[in-house]
Image (cartoon, rainbow, N blue to C red; front, side, top):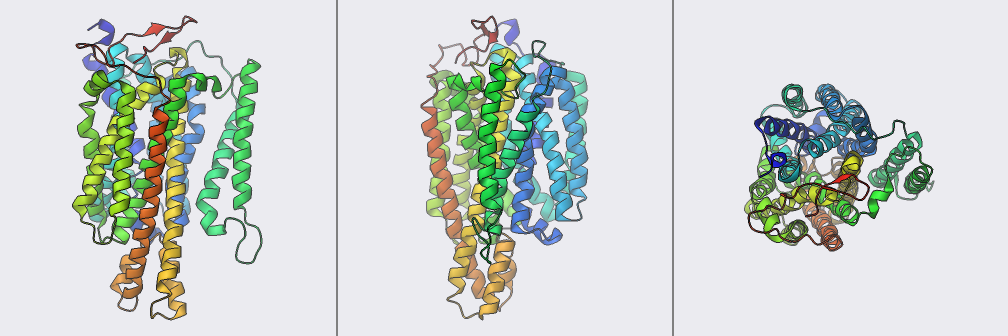
Length: 541
């Protein structure tokens, strides 16, 4: 093994420090999911607010990723990582102390800002600090951390909501964040891109942020306001937000192209999309994130609302996803060496599609927890295979000088997928549950006024009120109808998620073929090479 490929003790500690920061920001995207029923009851959060609590985090995360990634490239990635951790911890204090839905959502917004500083700086730091085989190992650990910690979050959140308080789901970030800051000061090298021109792309930031915000607003609030007209026939803001958001994104693409052609500083060089591995890789990455984070938002609502699980029991079920991810991570480098990275990504996505499709086909109010756990374990294995190697596939042909911008681009796409997963699958689950409950209770013996009350409670709580309805003899029969409605809605959403993952599998056929490596040489063992323009490139797989 060459000197550049060896991993020193200090570099192992640096990898652990960066992984800890990634763990905090990724886990926080899912840690409150299983505590949602408790938060809904404690703060009076409604269904729309529950979606915003998750989506605003991912939306700010995605909107600012490119901007802050460039700031890190210019002024120092270690410095940006430390500032991001500090911002994230301050916002976590506010989220844990929230006395109203507005304060909680505002704190989540600031958390998203801190997370947007942390994630791209970790990836570009790894890319700069590690070379050859060591870089491949670092990327695999980084990718596995993302997939695994997203599933660990619900278990931690379930334990805290059951035995302590949901507020500690946020306050837990403080001690671990301080530990990460200490490790940052002791083990991480300061790196920056000295070739990058200084300057800001204000139009790009505004167009991309407002465009994504408009699209996500429409997807989340469509059920509340109405997709076209409200009850009195007047037009709602939803279609205007959706169309406006799409137009702003189109304008963003045009503006960025013109700025690049004019030699001006651009938020993102869309020329990166000409790199085939990068283009198809980020499509697959967005689909993985959409499926995983959409599932982790909707599944706890099903488990607690219709299947009778507690918050902690839900966390234990979802832990099987994390176990699958972590257990396969050790075998991923060997599989990549024997099969090639692209094949490993494809197999991972195929396993995800099979698992979610199987869950959709077998869901019922009497489905044993062991069956759900098996499907989630298989899904976790798929996440571990796909996520760990996607980072390698995405960045493998990107010039090292553009690694900061490229890593920011791909993490932006991942977070956009997360926000869309919560907005699309969460919105679909709530809307379908509401309409199904309305249809089913219409056949019950409840008076019309009480039927409307039951439907409103199920809708406003995103199904979290079903156990309370079941405990009241007067509404127990309606609660059974609501449980069946929630199961039906979950079948629909998981079925659609499985279909989206099939599209992700298809996208992998657009990736360049990555051959298996000769015996004794790992898939990550190749040394960097120099591109035509004299810039260092990571070797092809």
